[in-house]
Amino acid sequence: MSLTPLEGLGANTSLQQLEKTYDKWSGKYETDMISLGYHGPGTVAKIVRGLFDNDGARILDMAAGTGMAGQELRKLGFTSIHASDMSTQILEQAKQKGVYDKVFRCRMGEDSIEGSDESYDCITIVGCFSVPVPVKAFQELNRVLSVGGYLVVTFRPDVWTDQDIYQYKQALNSAEWRHVSESLEDFHGVLNQDKNEEFSAKWFYVVYQKV
Ligand SMILES: C[S@@+](CC[C@H](N)C(=O)[O-])C[C@H]1O[C@@H](n2cnc3c(N)ncnc32)[C@H](O)[C@@H]1O
Image (cartoon, rainbow, N blue to C red; front, side, top):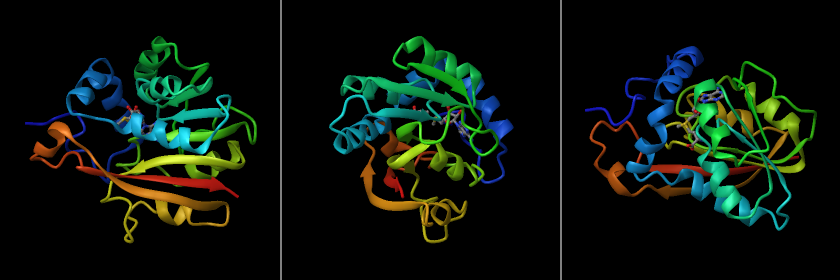
């Protein structure tokens, strides 16, 4: 039995297919993920807190989904958070949380990000890169970050490898970015019983800085 509607989506999944999947899943996404013991947004928020003393750091939560990372960032004191996602239906849920100052649609890798150059100090992307996102997305992310600003992002271990199947590593290990840290963290809860291996039991939490 599938744990979530993501089963069967892989390297050949188009952004359009993925968007439809998340649109359909939007009403149940959060309860499903909580029941799986999902703690990615909380872990990312703690990493961001460790990077900034300033509560007013301008944060953009890309691929924000229902806004779980925004909620965690607010709990830790951050006061300026924007959100974006490609699924309009899931973004409605994020809006309703009231934790974001601005919410806008963007298909990373296809669309420009709303906002001028260097308008954010930090971008978070949690749980998005299991399927291919066109790597030109990283140029746009770099554009809207301030110099010295941070990208805090998660990758599944089968994606963040030397084989680099989607070229994410190649895009980030370039002159525009400085690698700051990465750690492989365990999931807990029922993910350990995921017989279909739909979810990885571990994720990489990776931090890069705009040079
Ligand atoms: C597993 S959910 C994670 C949502 C949220 N960050 C969280 O941790 O709960 C992945 C999200 O990424 C979004 N997404 C995937 N590819 C995207 C892309 N290329 N551009 C924008 N959003 C994307 C999906 O619509 C979905 O909301």
